[in-house]
Amino acid sequence: MKTRLTRIFCMLFAILVYFYGDWRGAILASGDVDYGSIAIFLLSLALVEVFLVFWLQGDLHLNVYRPKAIVALFIWLLLLCFLRPNLMSSLRNYLSILFTFGTVLFLSSIIQSLDVLRGLKLIVLSLLTTLGVSVVVHLTMVGPIYFFAHGDIQARVGGIFFFGLFGALAGLGAVASFVGLICASVKREKVIYVLSMALFLLFLVMSDLRTGEFAVAISFLVGYSVSTHRPRWLKAGFRVFFVALVFYGAFLIMSPSVPIIESGNVENDLVWRTLVWDLSITGIASRPFTGFGGENYLKGNLEGVVLDGNLADPHSSYLSLILQYGFISLVLFAIVYGGIVYRLFRQAAEGMKVFVCVAIYWALVSSTGGTYFNGTSGFGQIMFEFSFLGLLCHPQLRSSRETTT
Image (cartoon, rainbow, N blue to C red; front, side):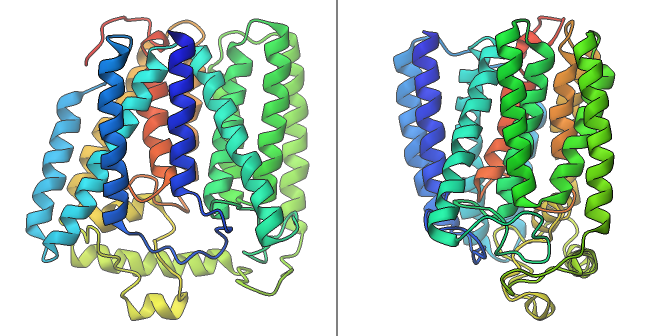
């Protein structure tokens, strides 16, 4: 049964990567989202998943925290469709969210039907394979690899994904490997997790996603601090990591931002993001409760075009969520996902509290980029929801065995 579930997970993961990836190289992509085609794809995938549920005949198990809050969130999102002027666009967006959530639940049920550490290995392997393929695509379709290319967007590694998502997935893989390293009991597994963590960190540096690097560092610190078992090798390794982190931070501060390819220069990145955030807040103020739904406020805004002709999101998942769905959606979102973290922190089984660093990572890496909280339109949204609903809701992480399905 475990082998069959593993194969199904790998197959669905590969299908999602193939659909959401840009195999010509995603650097400087337009950012346009066709919610209609996404909804059709996810609906087709949902039909396959329904067949698999019946075929597996009870092998799947799913634990969902606060299902009433999730239902309330989806009812509110549906109501928003009728409160906005662009009804059809909002409905297409809503269907994409709904079908995406269904796929996330199916993937989550597979992971929760496996041993939690076996599922963690599966996630690490899937991410490692995906990012490895992305590097190959970048080398063959985009160009050579440059390190510390924070003066130039096109020089950053992305491959089938834009560099921001590539870096976010690399950071997630590094944090997952760190969790596996803490929880592993066999020396061979510890060595494998150290090697995978090093490779993910290399990918992260290649992407030059500095928010991701910061998020990984803080997640490691939190994970180490909440670990109840700290053997001598872990303490020594963490000291080495901390010293390396200090030197790396000093290097980033002192290194100049020199454009390499002379395209998409982002030397004054923080100033530029501040302008984008200010513009996004203006949009939020105009529709604080309903948001814009599937309508891209920044794409149709003259100031946004002046800032960047390809500007498609507020470069903050928090602002993006409010801009699209309003403040009430943010509150419901916080109840659902914040509640998962709170329960894990309070009810974690022995040695399992370290999984909290996965949530810390997502909270930080989402602050200055991505649209990971919006529920649709990309692979990053699926991985965010899956990290919480699949991994962090796993029943083996809690000392209390009561489940809510």
